[in-house]
Length: 102
Image 1 (tube, rainbow, N blue to C red):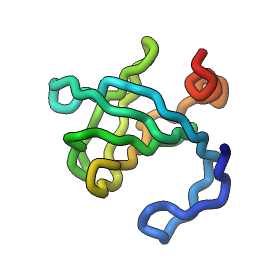
Image 2 (image 1 turned 90 degrees about the horizontal axis):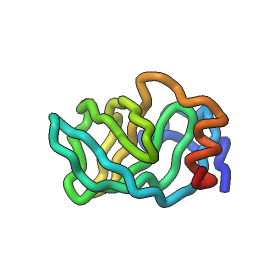
Image 3 (image 1 turned 180 degrees about the horizontal axis):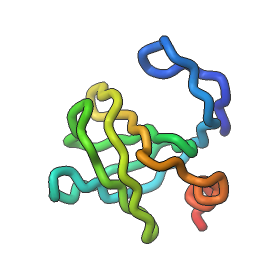
């Protein structure tokens, strides 16, 4: 499923990049500590993730999956879910590969 027109969690700024639903286990590196997490949806500019011990808003994280490392900052946290914005946008091909399990 792709969502083009939803609002950001704050409800103030519309998202520009299309989001793609997925459920992908990842390793979240937070202050040098690896944590198990899952990506729930992804776009070229960010992702929604779930972790039993989520990072704090404003924190920097490194997300590792399938040999790819992406640096992002945490823009919001609600319970065990959190949103990240990638420091460098992913290509459409990279997002498609992650969503399709390539």
